[in-house]
Image 1: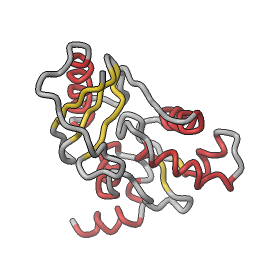
Image 2: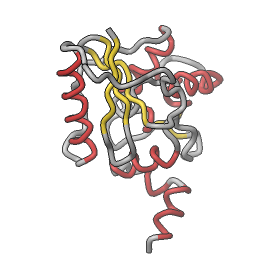
Image 3: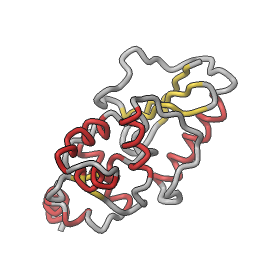
Amino acid sequence: MIAYRIVASPLGEVLLRADGARLSGLFFAGQKYYPAAATPDADVPAAAKPVFEQAADELADYFAERLQAFSVPTMLAGSPFQRSVWQALCEIPFGQTTSYGELAAGLGLPPTHARAVGGAVGRNPLSVIVPCHRVLGASGDLTGYAGGTDRKRALLRLEGTAAAMALPILRQSALAFE
């Protein structure tokens, strides 16, 4: 049974979706592909309560810089190609980034498949937990992020990525605060 719950985060409200005892979705408010018909359940099914609590606790710890890897049980529903891309995203270490082309190469695909990989990255149903924010354009620029590039920038900054301050948009932001 699918259930929904909304939790607060420093980057806005987050909709959690559970399918039984597994987290199957984490979406920022206003995010592309946000489940339109989703409404938080007033009476959460018993199987979903522990997964919602663990997801909310782990998100809070992540944003408080006390957690680098999530352990909440998840379920990723998608095509075999999408699931292979999402699994590759999970292998990008905290604080590091890669490009769509490098991700494609890591999957044994030619560089011409970087756009298809980008499409699968954009359809990731578990933002933050499956770290699609760690993927940059070939030149190191921020590119599309279903949750918005401001959130992507904030997540990269939170993780202290070595590439974060080298990103043109982050360099501009950093200079504005000096």
